[in-house]
Length: 77
Image 1 (cartoon, one colour):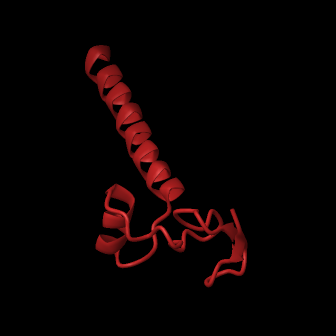
Image 2 (cartoon, rainbow, N blue to C red):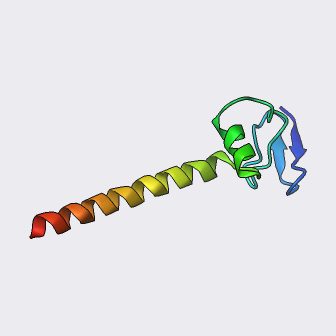
Protein backbone atom coordinates (compact mmCIF):
# COMPACT_ATOMS: atom_id res chain seq x y z
CA UNK A 1 0.00 0.00 0.00
CA UNK A 2 1.42 3.34 -1.05
CA UNK A 3 0.10 6.70 0.11
CA UNK A 4 -0.33 9.17 -2.73
CA UNK A 5 -1.64 12.74 -2.61
CA UNK A 6 -5.24 13.25 -3.67
CA UNK A 7 -5.35 15.37 -6.85
CA UNK A 8 -8.30 17.38 -5.50
CA UNK A 9 -7.33 18.16 -1.90
CA UNK A 10 -3.70 16.95 -1.43
CA UNK A 11 -4.77 14.66 1.42
CA UNK A 12 -2.63 11.48 1.52
CA UNK A 13 -4.67 8.48 0.36
CA UNK A 14 -3.89 4.82 -0.25
CA UNK A 15 -3.35 3.94 -3.91
CA UNK A 16 -5.88 1.13 -3.41
CA UNK A 17 -8.57 3.44 -1.98
CA UNK A 18 -11.84 3.70 -3.85
CA UNK A 19 -12.10 7.42 -3.10
CA UNK A 20 -10.47 10.09 -0.97
CA UNK A 21 -12.02 9.95 2.52
CA UNK A 22 -11.73 13.74 2.84
CA UNK A 23 -13.26 15.05 -0.40
CA UNK A 24 -14.65 11.93 -2.14
CA UNK A 25 -12.51 12.33 -5.26
CA UNK A 26 -12.34 8.90 -6.93
CA UNK A 27 -9.09 7.01 -6.61
CA UNK A 28 -7.37 4.67 -9.01
CA UNK A 29 -10.09 2.07 -8.38
CA UNK A 30 -12.79 4.42 -9.74
CA UNK A 31 -13.45 2.29 -12.84
CA UNK A 32 -15.38 -0.27 -10.77
CA UNK A 33 -19.05 -0.86 -11.39
CA UNK A 34 -21.47 -0.36 -8.55
CA UNK A 35 -23.79 2.00 -6.75
CA UNK A 36 -21.34 4.69 -5.61
CA UNK A 37 -19.68 5.30 -9.02
CA UNK A 38 -23.08 5.20 -10.74
CA UNK A 39 -24.55 7.78 -8.39
CA UNK A 40 -21.46 9.91 -8.80
CA UNK A 41 -21.90 9.92 -12.56
CA UNK A 42 -25.62 10.69 -12.27
CA UNK A 43 -25.01 13.59 -9.89
CA UNK A 44 -22.27 14.91 -12.16
CA UNK A 45 -19.84 15.21 -9.27
CA UNK A 46 -17.89 13.02 -6.92
CA UNK A 47 -20.14 11.45 -4.32
CA UNK A 48 -18.49 9.70 -1.41
CA UNK A 49 -19.94 6.69 0.34
CA UNK A 50 -20.31 8.79 3.50
CA UNK A 51 -22.42 11.36 1.66
CA UNK A 52 -24.69 8.68 0.22
CA UNK A 53 -25.05 6.98 3.60
CA UNK A 54 -25.87 10.29 5.27
CA UNK A 55 -28.49 11.13 2.66
CA UNK A 56 -30.16 7.74 2.95
CA UNK A 57 -30.15 7.73 6.75
CA UNK A 58 -31.40 11.32 6.87
CA UNK A 59 -34.29 10.46 4.55
CA UNK A 60 -35.21 7.39 6.58
CA UNK A 61 -35.12 9.38 9.84
CA UNK A 62 -37.26 12.15 8.33
CA UNK A 63 -39.87 9.67 7.09
CA UNK A 64 -39.86 7.84 10.43
CA UNK A 65 -40.46 11.02 12.42
CA UNK A 66 -43.16 12.10 9.97
CA UNK A 67 -44.89 8.72 10.28
CA UNK A 68 -44.83 8.89 14.08
CA UNK A 69 -46.21 12.44 14.09
CA UNK A 70 -48.99 11.56 11.64
CA UNK A 71 -49.88 8.50 13.72
CA UNK A 72 -50.04 10.58 16.89
CA UNK A 73 -52.20 13.22 15.22
CA UNK A 74 -54.63 10.69 13.77
CA UNK A 75 -54.98 8.64 16.99
CA UNK A 76 -55.38 11.71 19.22
CA UNK A 77 -58.81 12.56 17.78
